[in-house]
Length: 489
Image (cartoon, rainbow, N blue to C red; front, side, top):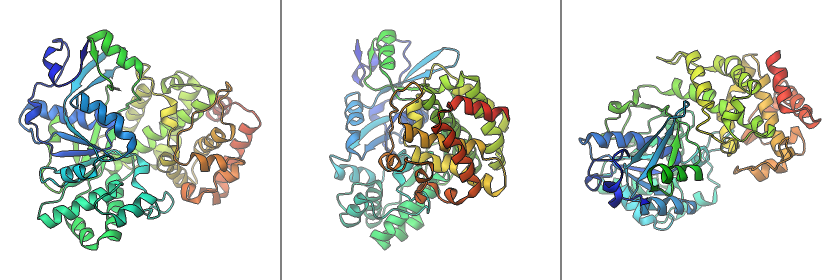
């Protein structure tokens, strides 16, 4: 067995695709905060392709972990010199494996914030990219405003040199770069939030404004926040992935990544200084990314929840299992066609019917085995953008909300029942799980949180439809039967 690290690269079998470029010579022009599976299957993959050409060695990645929970990924990648296997599983059963080398450094800022601050302040750092999840942007979902009451935010407003949040870190870095006369970095959000760059700009500037007006004005004038749309289904790594590498290649990799073959990155060409030649490796550089991100959020991301939430109640464990059920598949497609598509803007270069067809194929990829547990996790951060905005727009236009309100009712029942139809406990992972569980005594109390559900509870048509589905679920009608009733109408 070969333990994966920089020294062992030359001893790998010829059939193992791995970096041929000099990783020691690679500079760290990108600092990424929130290194997880998606970052490693997406942005790090693209940057690895750029570095493989051998002409742009200034764009290596330094990962930064801000949370205590980032210790594991820090230790794993440090022991493996940043290397990991990317396992691409095709619908036809083919599997491609490639070792990615673009992450050349990792700093655990939770343990050593000053080391991270120095790296971020280095003029060599041109881009600070983010995958911190929807909840990481710390905004009130009903007002869209920055939450100043968060304990860590309060800490960072007072203690500039020992920050805990991403807002505290980047504001302190902006202060240091401003005082040193350096150029600003680009803040590049790669999270699944509509207008993610605009959201990032609003949240970071809001924090800076409350901490230091001079830094706020400097960032306002010098820091770019491009919007982006990112896409690649990346399920949680399993023991099966580790065993596959050992059995097939005799490689010990403690944290590989599995993904689908499809990949997309649409990015606004808006940077504070120079940038990597992303257009050379398939990234779409555009003036306006909004139509693309809206399409993805309301079709792909919402489609996942439309399958995952009722799928978990029914007892399915993976998204492809949901898709193999003709009722679930037809329900999702009807939701996309009838309720999601009418809310979309024209998307240049995209035929929506073909895009939806491709989603059906991707969701049905049985070699990916994306879990409904992953899809349902942190739904309180996802659904307001993926689904609630679609429902609200359809309400205002007097269009159908039948399927959207049904999914909200399933989400209520998810907490109300706490078990699936096979009487197995549901695993709930959500920052607001305690609050939602406390509110799940009745359909009306569940949606009483206006910061989460906005104006939906006040809309009589929504309340009637949602309550109808919730009451049927509470009376014992099975999820699949209700879905069949809806698609038969």
